[in-house]
Image 1 (cartoon, one colour):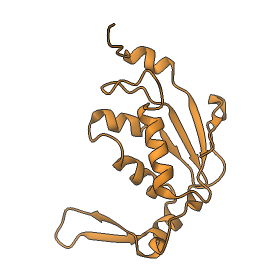
Image 2 (tube, helix red, strand yellow; image 1 turned 90 degrees about the horizontal axis):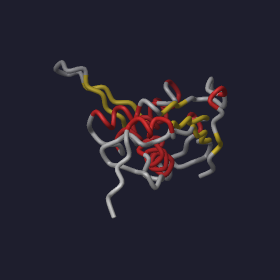
Image 3 (tube, helix red, strand yellow; image 1 turned 90 degrees about the vertical axis):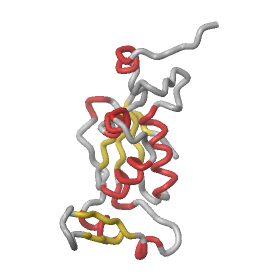
Image 4 (tube, one colour; image 1 turned 180 degrees about the vertical axis):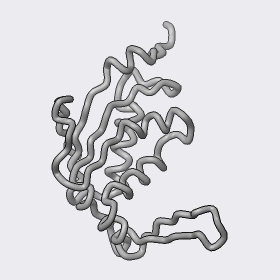
Length: 144
């Protein structure tokens, strides 16, 4: 029996759209489920070197939860590249200004660090509220 290898053209045709509600979901569990859907590991045709994943829409990103005291203590860092250019923001401050950023950063850390991983991340759409502009794609709700 020969090993099956998915072709990129047939993988693009088989993509589905999923909607996930992030309200009151733990950030890490949500991100790991989203990363699995983006990479295609939930499909029997998964091939490591081909982007076989689906599109994922995450709504209510501003209402994602962290366990314990992490909402006040978890810190996100960014550096400008200049001396003294380190910027630090807490999770609560980041969710107030850019509610999609914590989910995008968590999912990005769980994907491959290559061109393939960056292509997978482009299929992630995160929105702070309950509305999204992708109703024409007929996304299916996915309960976690």
